[in-house]
Image 1 (cartoon, rainbow, N blue to C red):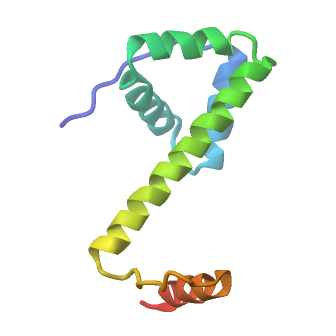
Image 2 (cartoon, one colour):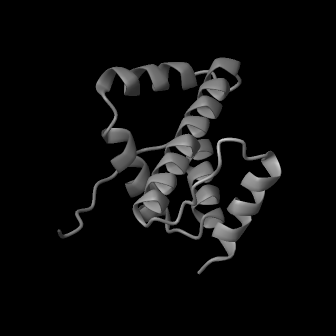
Length: 115
């Protein structure tokens, strides 16, 4: 699909934040903004409105806590998906019911080393 240019107005502080984050992530500003819009636009309107409302006060602990919670949920989802992929490849060993923590760590280490 062909790219289409759209525009947005940001205050200088937010614009600078976008430039810094894009540079830190080795992305163009356009690419950074496009990714942000695509993800944000997929949220239900009520969620988008609530996130914007919580963000109004950048120092607000509730917003920072929510961001940490979302990051933890995303990490868990990525872990679950990776586990499912490993299981589908039959790369997960079966462990004895009485496996010790050391047995589990040894098995995990062997999975990592296996190409």
